[in-house]
Image (cartoon, rainbow, N blue to C red; front, top):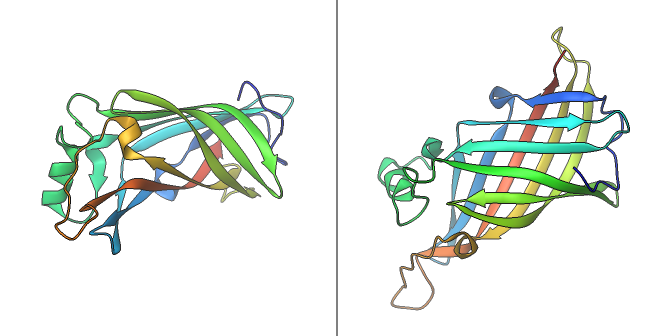
Length: 184
């Protein structure tokens, strides 16, 4: 992160590749004003690059067509121009711009691009530490969360309910569970 003011402890310099088999990119959104629908993206990649001075930068890419909400019809609608428009905008990306300590945890700032719109977001980051791994090199673990407004990214479809409110809420909670492996 180019404006880092904090470094993650015990994270060796080098490139840490996100391991998609031990990581997840999930989201939730209010549905019918009373519950939440949850989903995930199954295809994503990224890396954490740590400089010799301990500053880190993060870049990631999510394949929008890999969305899975456990309902094929809903997934198809979410891929349509009403929502993500996966054909025209096949990826969402994140590139960090800063890292700062917040108590025992951190805040990662960065540019998030979704549906062709780029906005600055902040992720609350918990660094879970480093493990020597299982014979394939060191791994590090992270959990990060943020809340975005879908309308800020051009997802403006509204489906009002007769009793007030909407079928789909505006606020989307994104949760990342990340395991990254140090590349040799």
